[in-house]
Image 1 (cartoon, rainbow, N blue to C red):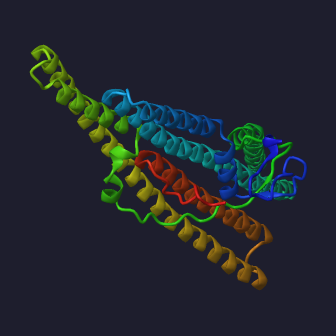
Image 2 (cartoon, rainbow, N blue to C red; image 1 turned 180 degrees about the horizontal axis):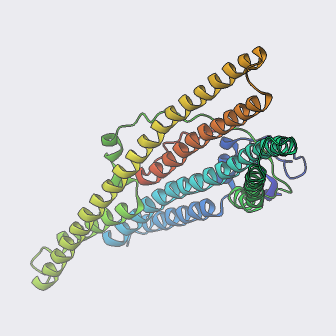
Image 3 (cartoon, rainbow, N blue to C red; image 1 turned 45 degrees about the horizontal axis):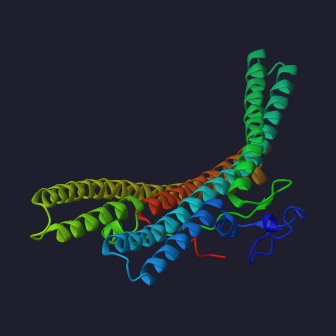
Length: 345
């Protein structure tokens, strides 16, 4: 039954009733609840916690193994959070890819209809001696190109659905109705804010910090009169190496965070451009509709404007989806959810 469990969602019968509509927040909530990666990470945390409890209960436990057990719990907690972010990113990407493909198919169908009409016009004009055979051939080529675009979109649907099914961890007998992704919000966190505590949120940095802490402890334990000087020297060398490794890893992580942050900012700026292009297309259609009523614009021009409007709507959706993807990538780089989707039911 767990394969069809949607938690608090109302989609438990989605595999049987394809009339249900799946939203992006619901898809992510479902994936996080059923992801094998998340369940494995949770199990690892439970195991580390149990091991630490056992060592604490043993009066003979020494400080080094106790410290290592405490570090294991901390690392498992961070791994769980990052795993959740990775599942979120994968599910978001799969959902958006399928949604965009479905929207692209709708646009391609409209473009095919327009190309068919243009071909019929050229054939009629050719029959009346008002167009050349080249005009007809070009119209046929344009139609074939649009038909191929539609076929490509249709061919992608099964694989895109399969990827979404994999991320959701459930069975879908057909493509579900996907609700439009919610409009993403502008990023409010500053880069400096995201840099704070970065070494506590990324597993690789946590491991490097733990190595420094463990080596520092070892130096402290070896700095006495009864430990051979060579042992202390070796511990200090190990500590220096660990500190340099941490410094380099932190610098790389900050650079990746900066790059992801800038990419998110750039993606958000593209949304405004896409919205303006959509507004322009709406204005053009409105003006041409008025001209059509006045008899100065043809019906095929109106159809062309409507297709252009559909195209600009898709472009806006793609711009918004690009920003969603950039936010998900930034979340991975920052070690915290910046999409706002992780906690939504």
